[in-house]
Length: 208
Image (cartoon, rainbow, N blue to C red; front, side, top):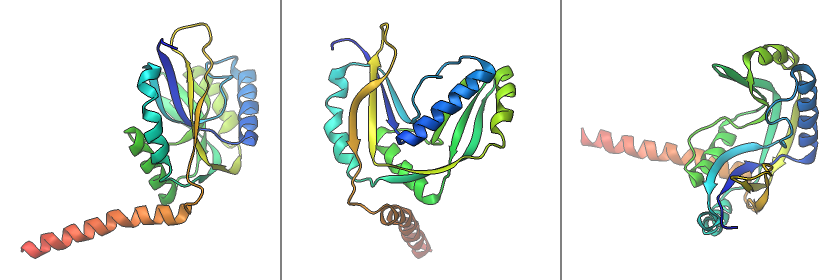
């Protein structure tokens, strides 16, 4: 391939989550009609790489594989639904429980991609009109869905930047380190900034 490609870096949930998201999307379409992203598979977006040549992406992979060996697999929990208000549009998504431990894990992952902070989520209906949102949100507002799942690898998807086929296909799957304990990893990361701050404070007081 010599042309430009679009890449999407994601965390892919297991099959049972994907199947439930598919059902929720189809039931949403029954209410508001077909919408963009209706047939996309469930995922948690980490970062898009738009309009990149394979020669740019290829050399990044070995370093990324090494970096990801510093991260343990993560267990995430879906807990109901929420939405993003985007002024003229809105997006409904499956909400993920956020804890100090999951936050520090995602912060470490973001560092490898220079990605700004974001709220991890699984989109159900993306960028739908406000009229469609007002029709659809009552179906999700009090809907219960709690499900725990494990993510043990990062996935890079790829598609042609220009062309008929707009569907993403798997380009690379890179595992996290199964030998690292998640709680030990996250607690260590949480303690490190505190130790740095305390040390800094001690130095400041010593000046006076």
